[in-house]
Image 1 (cartoon, helix red, strand yellow):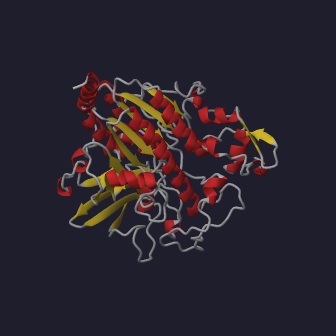
Image 2 (cartoon, one colour; image 1 turned 30 degrees about the vertical axis):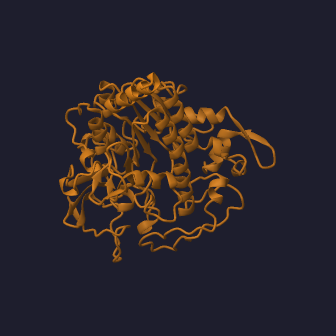
Image 3 (tube, rainbow, N blue to C red; image 1 turned 120 degrees about the vertical axis):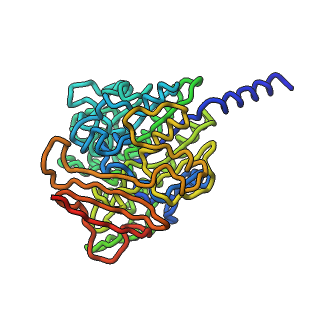
Length: 478
C-alpha cells in the first residue's frame, strides 16, 4: 500500500471518528407548504436534500414571531421559559445557556451569520450605544456562544434608521454606489430603501440597475457564510447557522428574480373572502418586484434555493462529514383566511419546512408525525456527543431522523404560543398557546386564548391551510 493511500485511509477513519459538522440553513418567514411539496417551485437543491435525507410534513415553531422563536431554539426551552416574549420586549437573556455554548464545550467551532435576532430589541446593541461597525464583534456574540460571526439586521430593520445606517449590511450599502437605468450614480443604501418602500424616499431611486443581485441581502448572507467557512479552523468540527433575511416581507425582488416568475401560476390562498389575488404573475416591466404577492414570495424562495447550493458546496468542501438541515423560524399567512404575516395559530404561520440530510440520516424518507423545531438544537448536541444544558425541554430527534418508527418518536405533543406584550405587562390583547398531537392517523391542534384569538377560524368549511385534518378548540379564559 502506498504511503499516500495509507494517509488517505487514516484521514478517512479520523473523519468518521470525529463528530459531524452541522449546517443549519434558516430563511425567515418560510411557510411549511412552500418547499419541495409545491410542484410549481423550482428548488433543485431542496429536492436533492430531501432525496438524500428526511423531510417532515409537520414541523412547528415554538413561538410565531422572530425573536421569541429563535430564543426557544437557542435556549432549548419552550416559549414560556425562553425569556423573550415578543420581538420588542428584550434581547436574549445571556444568563440562559445556549446550545451553541454547549457545542463549544464539546470542541465545536460555532458560527452565525445573517439576522439571528437574538439581540433584536437592542438592534445588535446599537440602541445601547454598543458599536455595530464590526459585524464579527457584535453585542453579546461571544456570550451567545458564537466562536465567529457576521451578524446584522434584516429587511425593514436595516432601513429603520434611514438615512443613517446602524448595522453591517446598511454600512456596506451606504459605502457603495449603484447606477440607475439612465446611468446616474446613486447611493446603494438609498436605492435599497426605495426598493423596500421606505416612506419619504424617492421611489425613482429603485430600478432594475440600482437593485442588483450581488447586493441583495440574501446573496450577501450566503457570501458571508462562505467567508466564515473559509476562516474556520480545519482541526475541529463546525456548526454554522445561516439566518437568511428572506422571504420575510417586504417581498422586494431584483428584476431578474421577478422576471423568473412572469406567466407562472401559484396556488391561491385558502379561505380568502376578499377579492382573490391573481394566481398568475404579471410582468413588472423589467423592473424589481415590489408588491406583496405570492409571485415575489416564490421568487425569494427560488433564489434562496440557489444560495443553499452555494453554502452547501462550500460547507461540504470544508468537511464532507456534515449534516445539513433547512427550516425556518415561523411561516407566512400569504392571505390565507384574509391574513398576512405571522403571529397567529393558523397553520400558515406556525408550521414550517424541515429537511435534514447527512451521515446516518434516512434517505428519501417523509415523516408525517408533528415535530418541534427547537428539537434541532438538542439533536445537534446528540450528534456532537455534547451535554444538554439544565432546565431545557427540547428532545433529540436523532432516532427519528435515522429511521426509527414514528410510533417511537421523541415527543407526542408539540407546544407553541405567543402573547402581544412582554411578560411583565398585564392584560395583553392576545395571549394564546397551542398544542399539536397526532393520534392514530389524525393530527389535532388545540388552541387556548386569553383575550382575543388572533386569526380566529372563519365559518367557511375549509381546512386550515393544508390537507391535514384539523380539530381546533377555541377555549377562552377570563
